[in-house]
Image (cartoon, rainbow, N blue to C red; front, top):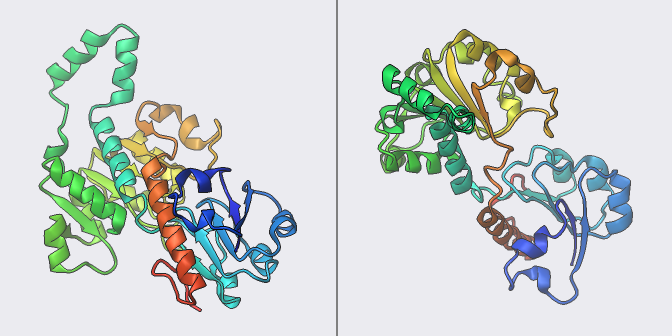
Length: 332
Protein backbone atom coordinates (compact mmCIF):
# COMPACT_ATOMS: atom_id res chain seq x y z
CA UNK A 1 0.00 0.00 0.00
CA UNK A 2 1.37 3.40 -0.99
CA UNK A 3 0.11 6.57 0.69
CA UNK A 4 0.68 10.16 -0.37
CA UNK A 5 0.55 12.44 2.65
CA UNK A 6 0.15 16.16 1.85
CA UNK A 7 0.59 18.25 4.95
CA UNK A 8 2.87 18.76 7.94
CA UNK A 9 5.82 16.42 7.71
CA UNK A 10 5.85 13.84 10.48
CA UNK A 11 2.13 14.07 11.32
CA UNK A 12 1.55 10.45 10.35
CA UNK A 13 4.23 9.13 12.68
CA UNK A 14 3.52 11.61 15.45
CA UNK A 15 -0.21 10.97 15.78
CA UNK A 16 -0.72 7.38 14.60
CA UNK A 17 -1.08 4.64 17.20
CA UNK A 18 1.74 2.05 17.33
CA UNK A 19 -0.56 -0.61 15.86
CA UNK A 20 -1.70 1.57 12.92
CA UNK A 21 -1.37 0.19 9.36
CA UNK A 22 1.29 2.87 8.82
CA UNK A 23 3.77 0.50 10.43
CA UNK A 24 2.85 -2.58 8.39
CA UNK A 25 5.64 -4.15 6.36
CA UNK A 26 5.57 -3.16 2.74
CA UNK A 27 3.84 0.19 3.21
CA UNK A 28 5.32 3.10 1.32
CA UNK A 29 4.73 6.61 2.64
CA UNK A 30 5.39 9.69 0.51
CA UNK A 31 5.35 12.69 2.86
CA UNK A 32 5.13 16.01 0.99
CA UNK A 33 4.25 19.63 1.87
CA UNK A 34 1.14 21.48 0.73
CA UNK A 35 0.90 23.88 -2.21
CA UNK A 36 3.14 22.04 -4.65
CA UNK A 37 2.10 21.68 -8.30
CA UNK A 38 0.07 18.54 -8.96
CA UNK A 39 2.79 17.33 -11.30
CA UNK A 40 5.28 17.10 -8.42
CA UNK A 41 2.95 14.91 -6.37
CA UNK A 42 2.28 12.71 -9.39
CA UNK A 43 5.98 12.37 -10.14
CA UNK A 44 6.81 11.40 -6.55
CA UNK A 45 3.80 9.19 -5.83
CA UNK A 46 2.20 8.28 -9.13
CA UNK A 47 1.26 4.82 -7.84
CA UNK A 48 -0.35 6.04 -4.59
CA UNK A 49 -3.54 4.24 -3.59
CA UNK A 50 -4.54 6.67 -0.85
CA UNK A 51 -4.10 10.38 -0.15
CA UNK A 52 -4.14 11.82 3.37
CA UNK A 53 -4.30 15.60 3.18
CA UNK A 54 -4.31 18.59 5.53
CA UNK A 55 -7.82 20.05 5.82
CA UNK A 56 -6.66 23.27 4.15
CA UNK A 57 -4.69 21.50 1.42
CA UNK A 58 -5.84 21.47 -2.20
CA UNK A 59 -6.62 18.19 -3.95
CA UNK A 60 -7.92 19.05 -7.39
CA UNK A 61 -8.90 17.09 -10.47
CA UNK A 62 -5.42 17.22 -12.02
CA UNK A 63 -3.94 15.32 -9.08
CA UNK A 64 -6.87 12.94 -8.70
CA UNK A 65 -6.82 12.03 -12.38
CA UNK A 66 -3.04 11.71 -12.36
CA UNK A 67 -3.00 8.83 -9.87
CA UNK A 68 -4.38 5.76 -11.69
CA UNK A 69 -4.39 3.50 -8.60
CA UNK A 70 -6.07 6.03 -6.29
CA UNK A 71 -8.81 4.54 -4.10
CA UNK A 72 -9.41 7.14 -1.37
CA UNK A 73 -8.70 10.69 -0.26
CA UNK A 74 -8.97 11.47 3.45
CA UNK A 75 -8.91 14.89 5.08
CA UNK A 76 -6.89 15.15 8.28
CA UNK A 77 -9.62 17.40 9.60
CA UNK A 78 -13.35 17.98 9.31
CA UNK A 79 -13.21 20.33 6.30
CA UNK A 80 -13.03 18.83 2.82
CA UNK A 81 -14.10 21.78 0.65
CA UNK A 82 -10.68 21.96 -1.02
CA UNK A 83 -10.97 18.39 -2.28
CA UNK A 84 -12.62 18.06 -5.69
CA UNK A 85 -15.29 15.60 -4.60
CA UNK A 86 -16.94 15.63 -8.02
CA UNK A 87 -13.72 14.64 -9.78
CA UNK A 88 -13.08 11.92 -7.19
CA UNK A 89 -16.61 10.54 -7.52
CA UNK A 90 -16.27 10.42 -11.29
CA UNK A 91 -13.31 8.09 -10.81
CA UNK A 92 -14.92 6.01 -8.06
CA UNK A 93 -12.50 7.42 -5.48
CA UNK A 94 -13.84 7.63 -1.92
CA UNK A 95 -13.51 11.01 -0.15
CA UNK A 96 -13.72 10.93 3.64
CA UNK A 97 -13.13 13.32 6.50
CA UNK A 98 -12.44 13.10 10.23
CA UNK A 99 -15.88 14.14 11.37
CA UNK A 100 -15.98 14.81 15.11
CA UNK A 101 -12.22 14.53 15.65
CA UNK A 102 -11.90 18.08 16.98
CA UNK A 103 -15.36 18.64 18.47
CA UNK A 104 -14.17 18.89 22.07
CA UNK A 105 -11.15 21.02 21.18
CA UNK A 106 -13.08 23.56 19.08
CA UNK A 107 -15.87 23.69 21.66
CA UNK A 108 -13.27 24.61 24.28
CA UNK A 109 -11.96 27.35 21.98
CA UNK A 110 -15.47 28.73 21.51
CA UNK A 111 -15.95 28.89 25.27
CA UNK A 112 -12.51 30.46 25.65
CA UNK A 113 -13.44 33.24 23.23
CA UNK A 114 -16.80 33.80 24.95
CA UNK A 115 -15.16 34.15 28.35
CA UNK A 116 -12.30 36.16 26.90
CA UNK A 117 -14.72 38.71 25.48
CA UNK A 118 -16.94 38.91 28.55
CA UNK A 119 -13.85 39.60 30.70
CA UNK A 120 -12.07 41.53 27.91
CA UNK A 121 -8.88 39.63 28.64
CA UNK A 122 -6.65 41.21 25.99
CA UNK A 123 -7.38 44.78 27.10
CA UNK A 124 -7.16 43.90 30.78
CA UNK A 125 -3.87 42.06 30.31
CA UNK A 126 -2.50 45.24 28.75
CA UNK A 127 -3.88 47.34 31.63
CA UNK A 128 -1.85 45.35 34.16
CA UNK A 129 1.27 45.50 31.99
CA UNK A 130 0.84 49.26 31.60
CA UNK A 131 0.61 49.79 35.36
CA UNK A 132 -3.07 50.80 35.46
CA UNK A 133 -4.45 47.68 37.10
CA UNK A 134 -6.36 49.45 39.86
CA UNK A 135 -7.89 51.98 37.47
CA UNK A 136 -9.16 49.18 35.24
CA UNK A 137 -10.60 47.33 38.23
CA UNK A 138 -12.29 50.41 39.66
CA UNK A 139 -13.89 51.22 36.30
CA UNK A 140 -15.55 47.80 36.25
CA UNK A 141 -16.71 48.22 39.84
CA UNK A 142 -18.23 51.62 39.10
CA UNK A 143 -19.90 50.55 35.86
CA UNK A 144 -20.96 47.10 37.08
CA UNK A 145 -20.63 45.78 33.53
CA UNK A 146 -18.73 42.51 33.94
CA UNK A 147 -21.04 39.69 32.87
CA UNK A 148 -20.91 36.01 33.77
CA UNK A 149 -21.40 33.45 31.02
CA UNK A 150 -24.28 31.90 32.99
CA UNK A 151 -26.19 35.17 32.65
CA UNK A 152 -26.07 35.06 28.85
CA UNK A 153 -28.39 33.49 26.30
CA UNK A 154 -26.26 31.73 23.69
CA UNK A 155 -27.28 30.97 20.11
CA UNK A 156 -25.53 28.24 18.13
CA UNK A 157 -25.82 28.57 14.35
CA UNK A 158 -25.54 24.96 13.24
CA UNK A 159 -25.82 21.94 15.47
CA UNK A 160 -23.26 19.36 14.43
CA UNK A 161 -20.62 17.68 16.58
CA UNK A 162 -18.85 20.88 17.59
CA UNK A 163 -22.01 22.81 18.44
CA UNK A 164 -23.24 19.87 20.52
CA UNK A 165 -19.96 19.73 22.43
CA UNK A 166 -20.22 23.50 22.94
CA UNK A 167 -23.75 23.11 24.31
CA UNK A 168 -22.50 20.54 26.83
CA UNK A 169 -19.83 22.95 28.07
CA UNK A 170 -22.26 25.85 28.22
CA UNK A 171 -24.55 23.75 30.40
CA UNK A 172 -21.62 23.06 32.73
CA UNK A 173 -21.15 26.83 33.06
CA UNK A 174 -24.77 27.19 34.11
CA UNK A 175 -26.10 28.72 30.89
CA UNK A 176 -29.87 28.22 30.96
CA UNK A 177 -30.90 29.50 27.54
CA UNK A 178 -29.06 27.70 24.74
CA UNK A 179 -30.68 28.11 21.32
CA UNK A 180 -29.72 26.41 18.08
CA UNK A 181 -30.61 26.79 14.43
CA UNK A 182 -30.21 24.27 11.63
CA UNK A 183 -32.27 23.72 8.52
CA UNK A 184 -33.81 20.55 9.94
CA UNK A 185 -34.34 20.58 13.72
CA UNK A 186 -33.04 17.59 15.67
CA UNK A 187 -35.30 15.24 17.59
CA UNK A 188 -36.92 16.24 20.87
CA UNK A 189 -34.78 13.58 22.57
CA UNK A 190 -31.56 15.23 21.34
CA UNK A 191 -32.80 18.65 22.36
CA UNK A 192 -33.45 17.35 25.86
CA UNK A 193 -30.06 15.60 25.98
CA UNK A 194 -28.18 18.79 25.10
CA UNK A 195 -30.63 21.13 26.89
CA UNK A 196 -31.16 23.27 23.79
CA UNK A 197 -34.14 24.87 22.10
CA UNK A 198 -34.66 25.29 18.36
CA UNK A 199 -35.20 28.77 16.97
CA UNK A 200 -35.51 30.11 13.46
CA UNK A 201 -32.35 31.99 12.56
CA UNK A 202 -33.86 35.48 12.79
CA UNK A 203 -35.36 34.69 16.20
CA UNK A 204 -32.09 33.23 17.46
CA UNK A 205 -30.13 36.31 16.40
CA UNK A 206 -32.58 38.62 18.16
CA UNK A 207 -32.68 36.58 21.38
CA UNK A 208 -29.00 35.72 21.91
CA UNK A 209 -26.42 37.68 23.88
CA UNK A 210 -23.72 35.56 22.23
CA UNK A 211 -23.99 34.07 18.72
CA UNK A 212 -21.52 31.32 17.75
CA UNK A 213 -21.06 29.96 14.22
CA UNK A 214 -20.86 26.18 13.72
CA UNK A 215 -21.63 25.53 10.05
CA UNK A 216 -19.45 24.27 7.18
CA UNK A 217 -18.45 26.33 4.16
CA UNK A 218 -20.89 25.71 1.31
CA UNK A 219 -22.12 27.98 -1.50
CA UNK A 220 -25.13 28.85 0.70
CA UNK A 221 -23.08 29.70 3.81
CA UNK A 222 -20.30 31.84 2.32
CA UNK A 223 -20.67 35.28 3.95
CA UNK A 224 -23.62 34.00 5.96
CA UNK A 225 -22.71 36.56 8.64
CA UNK A 226 -23.37 39.66 6.53
CA UNK A 227 -24.88 43.09 7.22
CA UNK A 228 -28.39 41.66 7.39
CA UNK A 229 -27.24 38.93 9.80
CA UNK A 230 -25.53 41.38 12.16
CA UNK A 231 -28.41 43.83 11.87
CA UNK A 232 -30.75 41.22 13.34
CA UNK A 233 -28.54 40.54 16.36
CA UNK A 234 -29.32 41.95 19.78
CA UNK A 235 -27.83 45.39 20.43
CA UNK A 236 -24.50 44.96 22.25
CA UNK A 237 -24.25 41.21 21.57
CA UNK A 238 -21.08 39.18 21.15
CA UNK A 239 -20.10 37.19 18.04
CA UNK A 240 -17.90 34.08 17.91
CA UNK A 241 -16.49 32.28 14.86
CA UNK A 242 -14.49 29.09 15.35
CA UNK A 243 -15.73 27.59 12.08
CA UNK A 244 -14.32 29.18 8.91
CA UNK A 245 -13.45 32.73 7.94
CA UNK A 246 -15.34 32.47 4.65
CA UNK A 247 -18.60 32.51 6.63
CA UNK A 248 -18.14 36.17 7.59
CA UNK A 249 -18.42 39.37 5.57
CA UNK A 250 -15.51 41.29 7.08
CA UNK A 251 -16.77 44.75 6.09
CA UNK A 252 -20.16 44.00 7.65
CA UNK A 253 -18.50 42.81 10.86
CA UNK A 254 -16.43 45.99 11.08
CA UNK A 255 -19.56 48.10 10.59
CA UNK A 256 -21.44 46.13 13.27
CA UNK A 257 -18.61 46.69 15.74
CA UNK A 258 -18.17 50.35 14.83
CA UNK A 259 -21.88 51.08 15.22
CA UNK A 260 -22.10 49.34 18.59
CA UNK A 261 -24.48 46.67 17.30
CA UNK A 262 -21.81 44.25 18.53
CA UNK A 263 -19.77 44.74 21.69
CA UNK A 264 -17.00 42.39 20.60
CA UNK A 265 -16.15 39.59 18.22
CA UNK A 266 -14.05 36.53 19.06
CA UNK A 267 -12.44 34.98 15.98
CA UNK A 268 -10.34 31.83 15.75
CA UNK A 269 -10.35 31.97 11.95
CA UNK A 270 -10.34 34.64 9.26
CA UNK A 271 -10.92 34.66 5.53
CA UNK A 272 -7.83 34.60 3.33
CA UNK A 273 -5.54 32.62 5.61
CA UNK A 274 -2.60 32.80 6.09
CA UNK A 275 -3.49 36.22 7.48
CA UNK A 276 -1.31 39.19 6.58
CA UNK A 277 -0.96 42.48 8.46
CA UNK A 278 -3.04 44.06 5.69
CA UNK A 279 -6.15 42.04 6.54
CA UNK A 280 -9.11 44.45 6.88
CA UNK A 281 -10.00 43.20 10.37
CA UNK A 282 -6.47 44.02 11.51
CA UNK A 283 -6.34 47.37 9.73
CA UNK A 284 -9.66 48.68 11.09
CA UNK A 285 -8.41 51.05 13.81
CA UNK A 286 -11.97 52.05 14.74
CA UNK A 287 -12.57 48.59 16.19
CA UNK A 288 -9.11 47.99 17.64
CA UNK A 289 -9.46 46.20 20.96
CA UNK A 290 -12.99 45.05 20.10
CA UNK A 291 -11.88 41.84 18.37
CA UNK A 292 -10.28 38.95 20.25
CA UNK A 293 -8.21 36.86 17.85
CA UNK A 294 -6.69 33.41 18.06
CA UNK A 295 -4.61 31.87 15.24
CA UNK A 296 -6.98 29.10 14.08
CA UNK A 297 -5.82 26.73 16.81
CA UNK A 298 -9.20 25.56 18.04
CA UNK A 299 -9.03 22.13 16.47
CA UNK A 300 -5.33 21.31 16.46
CA UNK A 301 -4.78 19.77 19.86
CA UNK A 302 -2.67 16.62 20.05
CA UNK A 303 -5.71 14.61 21.09
CA UNK A 304 -7.65 15.87 18.06
CA UNK A 305 -4.98 14.63 15.68
CA UNK A 306 -4.74 11.29 17.45
CA UNK A 307 -8.50 10.88 17.09
CA UNK A 308 -8.23 11.92 13.45
CA UNK A 309 -5.58 9.35 12.59
CA UNK A 310 -7.54 6.61 14.34
CA UNK A 311 -10.42 7.50 12.01
CA UNK A 312 -8.17 7.72 8.95
CA UNK A 313 -6.67 4.27 9.42
CA UNK A 314 -10.06 2.77 10.13
CA UNK A 315 -11.47 4.30 6.95
CA UNK A 316 -8.51 3.23 4.80
CA UNK A 317 -8.85 -0.34 6.04
CA UNK A 318 -12.58 -0.19 5.24
CA UNK A 319 -11.81 0.97 1.69
CA UNK A 320 -9.24 -1.80 1.29
CA UNK A 321 -11.91 -4.31 2.28
CA UNK A 322 -14.12 -3.08 -0.55
CA UNK A 323 -16.64 -1.22 1.63
CA UNK A 324 -17.53 2.45 1.98
CA UNK A 325 -16.34 4.01 5.27
CA UNK A 326 -18.89 5.64 7.54
CA UNK A 327 -17.17 9.01 7.24
CA UNK A 328 -17.27 9.04 3.42
CA UNK A 329 -18.77 12.18 1.91
CA UNK A 330 -19.45 10.54 -1.44
CA UNK A 331 -20.26 7.03 -2.63
CA UNK A 332 -19.07 4.78 -5.41
